[in-house]
Image (cartoon, rainbow, N blue to C red; front, top):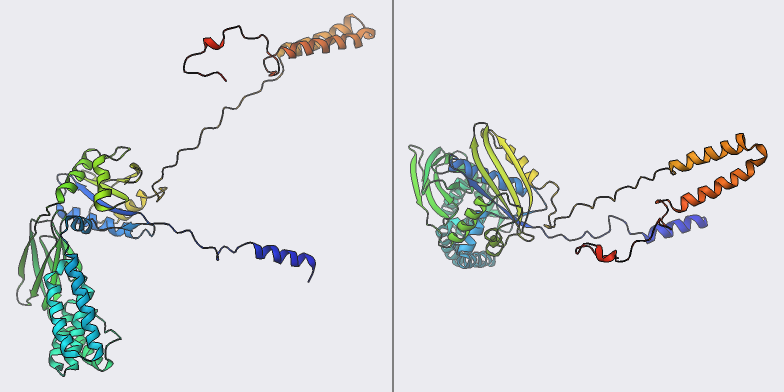
Length: 439
């Protein structure tokens, strides 16, 4: 191997490879969106746009998108976090008992956990409820109650058709689980009508969005289902509903207004009045203290003859500045333009909230003019006079005189910075304006 190759490999080894360099850790800004609807915009349409806008923002991997309803509920203290955490702890303890062989005690504790989950239906994760029901069926089958275990698995597949069997449980019970799954596929279907007081809440059945109340959920399997409702300014509600294949039943949920929502409502009202300003108002910046947000998007809806006009403003609550604005008018038959609007809001926007000043304008270019026109005129005049009038013998003397004249003129020319034509008069510094300092 040559010396040049050894030197090249040594230099390459000193340079860190790009793929091995550790990427700089960036903190995702916490952002949420609020939809401000004017008169004439239906509440159902407002909820649909809010849901679509939040879903579109969630596709941006640089953002930590928060659910505005959940943030409001957490601020109001309406989420029983302690009770939910206690139920999760009991759930894990019951599964541990089941794995250690005490199925009877695990069954009793799992039944109590499932009852507690149903009482806190709007605030729990549905997958935890499904896992607890699977564990209950396994406990029943372990105790020899296979018929009760089959009924428990069947109730699970009514509202959770895609439930899976956890691999940590006994595989001997898996065929019973599959039997209940095939049985649930043959169930008859029905529908239910969901309403709330007040109306306009987002309705979910088994964790699936079905519309804004009043609405109807179709194609549900016969049996027990779980309905939850969300509305800004109100505590989330939930109902356990039964689907009858013979008739469509109606269920109504009464939502309780949040006691601490008045602070948020004042901030939203102030944002609607001052929407479009370059700086966030104090009421807007209060959302950072109350909801622990970094950025907030206010989307103003207005019905026009051309369609629905959406004006979205992105404010950074750290720098208290408006970072961007995006507008769009579209037909409400499809909400696909909302995805493009969510993308346009963050075009050329730094995620750290900093606003970079535009670069300074370049200094004006000084156009250097040519030599003084009198110099060119005198040059040709001197040459002409020396050559034609004085004769060829006196031409060298004329050229010397011409160069001395040129030197005298250029020494007093304004383009020569070394010398000036005349010195400034005394007291010139005192004649400067008061806001200009002499250097």
